[in-house]
Image (tube, rainbow, N blue to C red; front, side):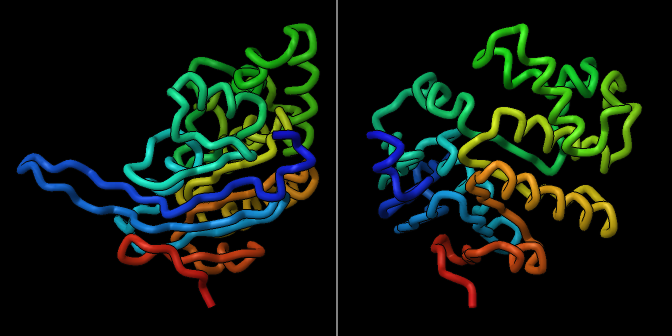
Length: 231
């Protein structure tokens, strides 16, 4: 399917996920989730702890497989793809930001940002792209610092630079401000939305923070395994 024909960055149809328990019974975590996310939009998914938000994010990103239903990412149905095929679909087109940063402790800030570029771009161009991403998050002077030498806010800025360096069409964010104080978290929120707009990426954000969710164009709440549009 050509890019011109893709009207939605992501679609689900009657998506469901069951987890097999030790007593041979199945726990239904998610069921009958049908969702359409327009390209370039920002979408928040909220819910209480244990409601299945992170599980849903994993299904939408193709990191996990559904028990029932279908997920189409960038117009491509993933139900018949194996793990390598789903990874190939994400390469250069999908970015991730997590609560706990997930930076490589033995790599510098610049090297962490270069990681997602190494498979998709010629080696001679990736350092320049990474340096530009560092400049976008205001940390050009931290290029050669290890994560342990950076504050939590700086580490999340590096994580944002890494996520956006390949100009992804879709960015998944899982509690991106969860490990930060309120002031630093606010700065990261503003940077996240700025980078999303600058790159025309689709942002799919999982959070327990209703104030953050309300900054998105669409807001859904996950409850009892089902997704409803928040008022």
